[in-house]
Length: 178
Length: 323
Ligand code: SF4
Ligand code: SF4
Image 1 (tube, rainbow over the protein chains, first blue to last red):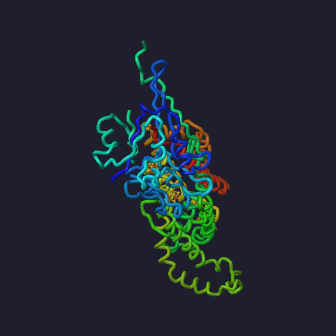
Image 2 (cartoon, chains in turn orange, green; image 1 turned 60 degrees about the horizontal axis):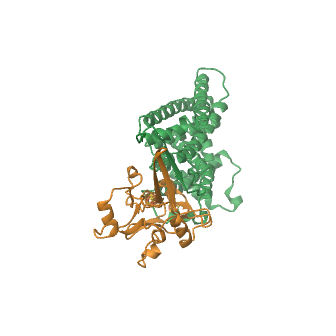
Image 3 (tube, each protein chain N blue to C red; image 1 turned 90 degrees about the vertical axis):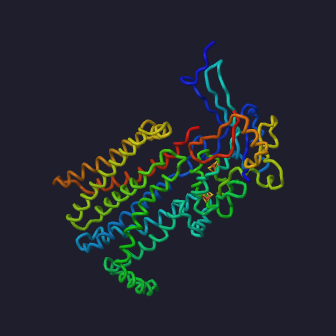
């Protein structure tokens, strides 16, 4: 069992609904976000290519954030979801420094570290993460990548995809269809 | 129609994200962490020299190194630890560092090494503090049991010294490894940083001992040691820079922050020139017989050491993996 997300950059319109859905679902503090949309524009007018990406914690297979955590607050649970245990976190920031995607932040009130949880509370109920479920273009897919029959597995079997900064060695588990 | 060109055309990257201390680049670790690294390296160096002087039975010849300078250490380590705790987001839970040992996490084993070295440094100073300050009488503070502690510390001083040798080296290297363990920050992710911070820490320690030295002979000895350390340090810094220039795009970009960016003046002006070259030249002049007030190179080295930590901590967070 390995949860993963597949995001179709060709269908994304950059509306940021996923960002707002996450902020509402997870009570993300004002001015912060656990997912965000980036836009890279390559080329010179009129030959430009735009890539829109909804980014978040990649729930990496090889997790520097878990490795550098001194208290074991950052940990991986069944299915490969990377979480922070608020009761153990001292807010030292080692995990933030070690994440190549800057996917973590210190919660302004708690002082502990916060990040995308793949909406584990929803996943355990059999639902999709909030971002996936609200996307108006249905460009995000969530599922078990170990299961060859899951939608995510089928998509990356036929479509061209990339992951972010694979050279960081983190084995990220968000796959971008390109 | 103009053919589509990737090279030579621009890639513009826009991120909708703007999180405090994370965007546009990390500013999470600030001055307290630099101070912690500086004081940790300084303390490790002083204790190392003190232990060596004790083991080779030269305490009377090198009184500053053996007895006076180490008095600074318990204070330096306490201030360093306070700075670290102050920088935590959740400081009241910092004891959680000590509910587990995680060897993969430098933050974890460093905290443990400090937990061992700090009390050792107090015991170390206790072995002779009443000899230096006869006015100290533990019964006056209603703590007569401290005589017993002192007696034990004196009895086992040799073993303490033997334990301090590896422990102080580990502590000194740790101040660099804490940063180099982060592969996500290319400027830190370099195996040289551990030895470099160790040597820099030893050099600031030698400078402190020069300030406390009780004889011209001792001052000269530690000036010589310091000259050697500064030369090694400069060599390692050159090595670091060359390594990055020969590196990949990410490393070259990371180095640009030091060589060609907002930290360039600080790097060359304050660290290389004022913190290393000027004190090196002054110490060489002093050895050659010119009259140089030793306090000047010693203080420059200490300031240079602190600036080096500030520079690496802040510039490192500007460097990132490009994607
Ligand atoms: S994206 Fe960052 S925070 Fe998430 S698992 Fe990978 S390294 Fe850890
Ligand atoms: S901030 Fe919290 S989760 Fe992150 S490394 Fe420190 S203790 Fe672990």
